[in-house]
Image (cartoon, rainbow, N blue to C red; front, side, top):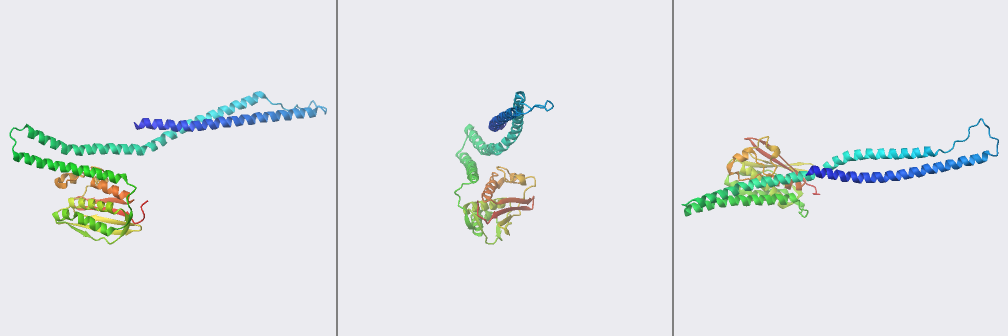
Length: 343
């Protein structure tokens, strides 16, 4: 599809360029022909005037007569002008065709990437939705085929189905959240906010999950003020803290460290969890991507969307987020945010 679109776009580029080139060539040809004819007339008049003046003098037979205008030479020169302009247009056509094809590719590349991303998103979302739906369908079909299906079994089935429905609800909520984050809504309010207050709010909201595993969050960051959207930043830190808690052992500590670098504040969230393999680190911010260590953890309950949402929020704040991790030793998530106004 994109190859055809690229060829069509190249054809349009070529058509526009050649129309301009041919128009200028016709104009230049007419101007040159007019100037050539004007030169021929002036030269002819000059020769005739010289001849009329020479009639009053004795003509020396040893002196050659003055040159006369050659109409054939004039026509030949006009033809050469036409040939040169045609050759120039042919070169422009070839050069424009090659250049236009390259430019068309560059023009369509962002659209192609967006379409590929959208197709990948639909494919991944369909895969994630298919698993709980298949589980629901299979369980209900088995129950319907059973001749002896007690009320107790029905209640257990309903409980299991509710768990699967909860998974679907969580997935749809995460997809909607990711979609809203990617839209980069222009009416988001960016103002000066207290980063320490935001972190405390995020820790407060995640505290129940942390207490369930007896995990202590050690906030060593100092009060700092940045330009950002308070609601989105709280959401960002909740996602990061939730991930750290989810993959950390019980009775462990998560540490938050702050470092100021010029016009930015870098926050590092350290845990002593299962860590991430080196081969997985480049992909952890991709949608639906889950590292092997995360897949092996049955109670993780994630869909691989949290860090994608976190990255979108950081990008919206014109910041940066990256990860350092070692399997079995823990993970460090670095979040760099600007203290300047968001443009």
